[in-house]
Image 1: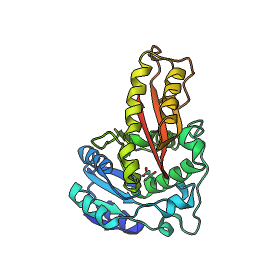
Image 2 (image 1 turned 135 degrees about the horizontal axis):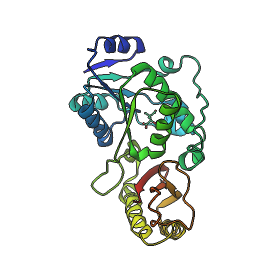
Image 3 (image 1 turned 90 degrees about the vertical axis):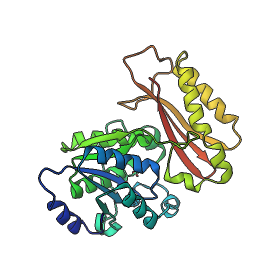
Length: 284
Ligand code: PAF
Protein backbone atom coordinates (compact mmCIF):
# COMPACT_ATOMS: atom_id res chain seq x y z
CA UNK A 1 0.00 0.00 0.00
CA UNK A 2 1.40 3.40 -0.98
CA UNK A 3 0.46 6.64 0.76
CA UNK A 4 0.60 9.99 -1.05
CA UNK A 5 0.13 13.52 0.23
CA UNK A 6 0.80 15.36 -3.03
CA UNK A 7 -1.23 15.30 -6.25
CA UNK A 8 1.90 15.13 -8.40
CA UNK A 9 3.37 12.06 -6.71
CA UNK A 10 0.04 10.20 -6.76
CA UNK A 11 -0.37 10.95 -10.46
CA UNK A 12 3.18 9.78 -11.19
CA UNK A 13 2.40 6.44 -9.55
CA UNK A 14 -0.91 6.14 -11.42
CA UNK A 15 0.83 6.80 -14.74
CA UNK A 16 2.98 3.72 -14.14
CA UNK A 17 -0.10 1.47 -14.08
CA UNK A 18 -0.43 -0.94 -17.00
CA UNK A 19 -2.93 0.17 -19.68
CA UNK A 20 -5.13 -2.80 -18.78
CA UNK A 21 -5.52 -1.70 -15.13
CA UNK A 22 -8.83 -0.23 -13.97
CA UNK A 23 -9.01 2.18 -11.07
CA UNK A 24 -11.70 2.11 -8.39
CA UNK A 25 -11.90 5.20 -6.18
CA UNK A 26 -13.41 5.52 -2.70
CA UNK A 27 -13.42 9.15 -1.50
CA UNK A 28 -13.74 9.46 2.30
CA UNK A 29 -13.29 11.94 5.10
CA UNK A 30 -11.54 9.32 7.23
CA UNK A 31 -12.72 7.99 10.63
CA UNK A 32 -13.23 4.78 8.71
CA UNK A 33 -15.77 2.12 9.73
CA UNK A 34 -17.22 -1.06 8.26
CA UNK A 35 -19.39 0.99 5.90
CA UNK A 36 -16.28 2.39 4.22
CA UNK A 37 -14.71 -1.06 4.14
CA UNK A 38 -17.78 -2.35 2.27
CA UNK A 39 -17.15 0.31 -0.41
CA UNK A 40 -13.52 -0.78 -0.64
CA UNK A 41 -14.54 -4.45 -0.94
CA UNK A 42 -16.90 -3.54 -3.78
CA UNK A 43 -14.12 -1.62 -5.52
CA UNK A 44 -11.75 -4.57 -5.18
CA UNK A 45 -14.39 -6.84 -6.75
CA UNK A 46 -14.77 -4.58 -9.80
CA UNK A 47 -11.48 -2.74 -10.35
CA UNK A 48 -7.90 -4.00 -10.49
CA UNK A 49 -6.58 -1.13 -8.29
CA UNK A 50 -8.29 0.66 -5.42
CA UNK A 51 -7.53 4.21 -4.29
CA UNK A 52 -8.96 5.70 -1.11
CA UNK A 53 -8.74 9.41 -0.32
CA UNK A 54 -8.93 10.81 3.19
CA UNK A 55 -9.75 14.49 3.19
CA UNK A 56 -11.96 16.38 5.63
CA UNK A 57 -13.43 18.84 3.17
CA UNK A 58 -13.97 22.22 4.85
CA UNK A 59 -16.35 23.62 2.22
CA UNK A 60 -19.08 21.04 2.83
CA UNK A 61 -19.57 21.90 6.52
CA UNK A 62 -22.26 24.47 7.19
CA UNK A 63 -21.32 24.70 10.88
CA UNK A 64 -17.75 25.51 11.96
CA UNK A 65 -18.35 23.41 15.11
CA UNK A 66 -19.04 20.29 13.02
CA UNK A 67 -15.79 20.72 11.11
CA UNK A 68 -13.79 21.30 14.32
CA UNK A 69 -15.29 18.19 15.95
CA UNK A 70 -14.87 15.92 12.93
CA UNK A 71 -12.89 12.88 14.13
CA UNK A 72 -9.37 12.51 12.70
CA UNK A 73 -8.03 8.97 13.13
CA UNK A 74 -5.37 8.66 10.42
CA UNK A 75 -3.23 5.96 12.08
CA UNK A 76 -6.13 3.57 12.69
CA UNK A 77 -7.55 4.43 9.24
CA UNK A 78 -4.25 3.42 7.63
CA UNK A 79 -4.25 0.11 9.54
CA UNK A 80 -7.80 -0.63 8.33
CA UNK A 81 -6.91 0.29 4.75
CA UNK A 82 -3.86 -1.95 4.81
CA UNK A 83 -5.98 -4.82 6.14
CA UNK A 84 -8.65 -4.18 3.49
CA UNK A 85 -5.97 -4.49 0.79
CA UNK A 86 -6.04 -0.95 -0.67
CA UNK A 87 -3.40 -0.09 -3.21
CA UNK A 88 -3.10 3.69 -2.92
CA UNK A 89 -4.08 6.16 -0.24
CA UNK A 90 -4.28 9.88 -0.93
CA UNK A 91 -4.19 12.22 2.09
CA UNK A 92 -3.84 15.78 0.81
CA UNK A 93 -4.03 18.88 3.00
CA UNK A 94 -6.39 21.79 2.37
CA UNK A 95 -3.75 23.79 0.48
CA UNK A 96 -3.05 20.88 -1.87
CA UNK A 97 -6.73 20.63 -2.83
CA UNK A 98 -7.79 24.29 -2.73
CA UNK A 99 -4.64 26.40 -2.94
CA UNK A 100 -5.43 29.75 -1.30
CA UNK A 101 -9.08 29.78 -2.37
CA UNK A 102 -11.01 27.56 0.03
CA UNK A 103 -14.41 28.04 -1.60
CA UNK A 104 -17.12 26.04 -3.32
CA UNK A 105 -18.04 26.34 -6.97
CA UNK A 106 -21.72 26.93 -7.83
CA UNK A 107 -23.50 24.15 -9.69
CA UNK A 108 -26.93 23.63 -11.11
CA UNK A 109 -28.19 20.44 -9.50
CA UNK A 110 -31.64 21.03 -11.01
CA UNK A 111 -34.00 20.40 -8.09
CA UNK A 112 -31.91 17.67 -6.44
CA UNK A 113 -30.37 19.96 -3.81
CA UNK A 114 -33.52 21.90 -2.89
CA UNK A 115 -34.88 19.25 -0.53
CA UNK A 116 -33.85 17.30 2.59
CA UNK A 117 -30.10 17.65 3.29
CA UNK A 118 -29.79 20.50 0.78
CA UNK A 119 -32.63 22.42 2.44
CA UNK A 120 -31.21 21.89 5.95
CA UNK A 121 -27.46 22.21 5.32
CA UNK A 122 -26.87 25.37 3.36
CA UNK A 123 -24.10 25.05 0.73
CA UNK A 124 -23.36 21.44 1.70
CA UNK A 125 -23.77 19.88 -1.73
CA UNK A 126 -21.83 22.63 -3.51
CA UNK A 127 -18.94 21.83 -1.16
CA UNK A 128 -19.28 18.09 -1.79
CA UNK A 129 -19.48 18.56 -5.57
CA UNK A 130 -16.49 20.91 -5.59
CA UNK A 131 -14.20 18.45 -3.81
CA UNK A 132 -15.51 15.34 -5.57
CA UNK A 133 -14.88 16.89 -8.99
CA UNK A 134 -11.39 18.01 -7.91
CA UNK A 135 -10.65 14.47 -6.68
CA UNK A 136 -12.01 12.89 -9.88
CA UNK A 137 -9.73 15.22 -11.86
CA UNK A 138 -6.70 14.09 -9.81
CA UNK A 139 -7.46 10.36 -9.68
CA UNK A 140 -9.19 9.89 -13.07
CA UNK A 141 -10.89 6.71 -11.85
CA UNK A 142 -12.88 4.25 -13.94
CA UNK A 143 -15.30 3.67 -11.05
CA UNK A 144 -16.18 5.64 -7.93
CA UNK A 145 -18.04 4.18 -4.97
CA UNK A 146 -20.48 5.99 -2.68
CA UNK A 147 -22.65 4.69 0.15
CA UNK A 148 -26.44 4.76 -0.14
CA UNK A 149 -26.65 6.18 3.39
CA UNK A 150 -25.97 9.55 1.76
CA UNK A 151 -28.49 8.78 -0.96
CA UNK A 152 -29.05 12.42 -1.94
CA UNK A 153 -25.28 12.89 -2.27
CA UNK A 154 -25.14 9.79 -4.49
CA UNK A 155 -27.88 11.11 -6.81
CA UNK A 156 -26.25 14.55 -6.97
CA UNK A 157 -22.90 13.01 -7.91
CA UNK A 158 -24.59 10.88 -10.59
CA UNK A 159 -26.14 14.06 -11.96
CA UNK A 160 -22.76 15.87 -11.90
CA UNK A 161 -20.99 13.08 -13.75
CA UNK A 162 -23.67 13.12 -16.44
CA UNK A 163 -23.73 16.90 -16.64
CA UNK A 164 -19.93 17.14 -16.96
CA UNK A 165 -19.85 14.22 -19.38
CA UNK A 166 -17.24 12.38 -17.28
CA UNK A 167 -16.27 8.90 -18.34
CA UNK A 168 -16.50 7.07 -15.05
CA UNK A 169 -19.14 4.87 -13.50
CA UNK A 170 -20.70 5.81 -10.17
CA UNK A 171 -21.56 2.78 -8.07
CA UNK A 172 -23.93 3.03 -5.10
CA UNK A 173 -23.31 0.56 -2.27
CA UNK A 174 -26.10 -0.47 0.16
CA UNK A 175 -26.09 0.92 3.71
CA UNK A 176 -23.97 -1.06 6.13
CA UNK A 177 -25.63 -1.42 9.52
CA UNK A 178 -24.68 -2.28 13.08
CA UNK A 179 -26.30 -5.49 14.43
CA UNK A 180 -29.07 -3.39 15.99
CA UNK A 181 -29.84 -1.69 12.65
CA UNK A 182 -28.14 1.68 13.21
CA UNK A 183 -26.62 2.86 9.91
CA UNK A 184 -22.82 3.00 10.20
CA UNK A 185 -21.51 6.54 10.35
CA UNK A 186 -18.36 8.25 11.59
CA UNK A 187 -20.69 10.30 13.80
CA UNK A 188 -21.88 7.22 15.77
CA UNK A 189 -18.64 7.26 17.77
CA UNK A 190 -19.64 10.66 19.16
CA UNK A 191 -23.02 9.50 20.52
CA UNK A 192 -23.45 9.41 24.30
CA UNK A 193 -24.13 5.97 25.80
CA UNK A 194 -27.81 6.87 26.14
CA UNK A 195 -28.16 8.16 22.57
CA UNK A 196 -26.28 5.17 21.15
CA UNK A 197 -28.80 2.93 22.95
CA UNK A 198 -31.76 4.90 21.57
CA UNK A 199 -30.47 5.50 18.01
CA UNK A 200 -31.60 2.12 16.52
CA UNK A 201 -35.16 3.49 16.96
CA UNK A 202 -34.50 5.44 13.73
CA UNK A 203 -34.15 2.35 11.51
CA UNK A 204 -36.90 0.48 13.38
CA UNK A 205 -39.25 3.39 12.62
CA UNK A 206 -38.20 3.38 8.96
CA UNK A 207 -38.94 -0.34 8.74
CA UNK A 208 -42.37 0.13 10.33
CA UNK A 209 -43.07 3.11 8.07
CA UNK A 210 -42.31 0.85 5.10
CA UNK A 211 -44.88 -1.67 6.35
CA UNK A 212 -47.46 1.09 6.93
CA UNK A 213 -46.84 2.49 3.44
CA UNK A 214 -47.83 -0.96 2.15
CA UNK A 215 -51.49 -0.03 2.78
CA UNK A 216 -51.62 3.68 3.65
CA UNK A 217 -50.93 6.98 1.90
CA UNK A 218 -47.82 9.15 2.09
CA UNK A 219 -49.61 11.57 4.44
CA UNK A 220 -50.80 8.82 6.79
CA UNK A 221 -47.32 7.29 6.90
CA UNK A 222 -45.69 10.67 7.54
CA UNK A 223 -48.16 11.54 10.30
CA UNK A 224 -47.42 8.21 11.97
CA UNK A 225 -43.64 8.81 11.88
CA UNK A 226 -43.89 12.39 13.20
CA UNK A 227 -46.10 11.10 16.02
CA UNK A 228 -43.57 8.40 16.96
CA UNK A 229 -40.80 10.97 17.34
CA UNK A 230 -42.99 13.46 19.20
CA UNK A 231 -43.40 10.79 21.86
CA UNK A 232 -39.72 9.87 21.93
CA UNK A 233 -37.94 11.46 24.93
CA UNK A 234 -34.38 11.41 23.55
CA UNK A 235 -34.51 11.77 19.75
CA UNK A 236 -35.57 14.90 17.82
CA UNK A 237 -36.86 14.48 14.29
CA UNK A 238 -35.54 17.11 11.88
CA UNK A 239 -37.34 15.79 8.82
CA UNK A 240 -39.00 12.69 7.44
CA UNK A 241 -39.74 12.69 3.74
CA UNK A 242 -41.11 10.23 1.22
CA UNK A 243 -39.66 11.10 -2.15
CA UNK A 244 -39.31 9.69 -5.61
CA UNK A 245 -35.91 7.99 -5.77
CA UNK A 246 -34.60 9.47 -9.05
CA UNK A 247 -35.80 13.06 -8.79
CA UNK A 248 -35.82 13.20 -4.95
CA UNK A 249 -38.98 15.27 -5.20
CA UNK A 250 -41.46 14.72 -2.35
CA UNK A 251 -44.32 12.36 -3.13
CA UNK A 252 -47.85 13.78 -3.19
CA UNK A 253 -49.61 13.39 0.20
CA UNK A 254 -52.27 11.14 -1.36
CA UNK A 255 -49.75 8.92 -3.21
CA UNK A 256 -49.43 5.31 -2.16
CA UNK A 257 -47.63 2.10 -3.01
CA UNK A 258 -50.17 1.12 -5.67
CA UNK A 259 -48.48 3.62 -7.96
CA UNK A 260 -46.03 0.99 -9.18
CA UNK A 261 -44.48 3.31 -11.77
CA UNK A 262 -42.78 5.32 -9.00
CA UNK A 263 -39.93 4.12 -6.85
CA UNK A 264 -40.43 5.80 -3.49
CA UNK A 265 -37.85 6.02 -0.74
CA UNK A 266 -38.19 7.35 2.80
CA UNK A 267 -35.52 9.71 4.15
CA UNK A 268 -34.95 10.80 7.72
CA UNK A 269 -32.71 13.14 9.74
CA UNK A 270 -32.73 12.97 13.52
CA UNK A 271 -30.83 14.71 16.32
CA UNK A 272 -29.60 12.33 19.00
CA UNK A 273 -28.47 15.00 21.45
CA UNK A 274 -26.02 17.14 19.47
CA UNK A 275 -25.33 14.46 16.86
CA UNK A 276 -27.26 14.55 13.63
CA UNK A 277 -27.98 11.15 12.10
CA UNK A 278 -29.48 10.38 8.69
CA UNK A 279 -30.88 7.19 7.20
CA UNK A 280 -33.16 6.04 4.40
CA UNK A 281 -35.05 3.00 3.16
CA UNK A 282 -36.47 1.90 -0.20
CA UNK A 283 -40.26 1.62 0.00
CA UNK A 284 -40.70 -0.70 -2.99
O1 PAF B 1 -19.44 11.12 1.93
C1 PAF B 1 -18.38 11.66 2.29
O2 PAF B 1 -17.63 11.15 3.11
C2 PAF B 1 -18.00 13.01 1.70
O3 PAF B 1 -19.12 13.79 1.45
C3 PAF B 1 -17.13 12.88 0.43
C4 PAF B 1 -17.89 12.21 -0.69
C5 PAF B 1 -15.87 12.11 0.74
C6 PAF B 1 -16.73 14.28 -0.07
O4 PAF B 1 -15.98 14.97 0.89
